[in-house]
Amino acid sequence: MLIPLTVVPNDAEAELLCALLRTEGIECDQRATNFGAGAMEGMRGGPREVFVAEESLERAREIVAASTRRAE
Image 1 (cartoon, rainbow, N blue to C red):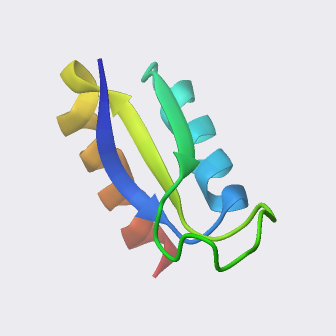
Image 2 (cartoon, rainbow, N blue to C red):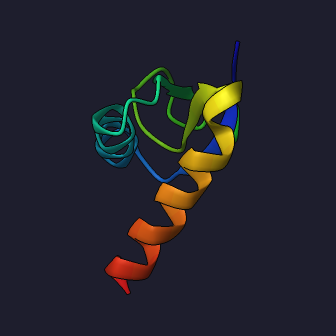
């Protein structure tokens, strides 16, 4: 079962995060959030929600935190 990990600003960031998580052996998926539903009139864009396997949630959080620290 996949559960929410985080929300990122766009599709590109979601793809990068999922790629990073997959290199660590963590199952990952992403989808558009319903934030601002209808604002883009059917165009792809806006915030993306990233999901991971429940058993990998803590490790995924550690990876996200570490990648955020490196980016600062």
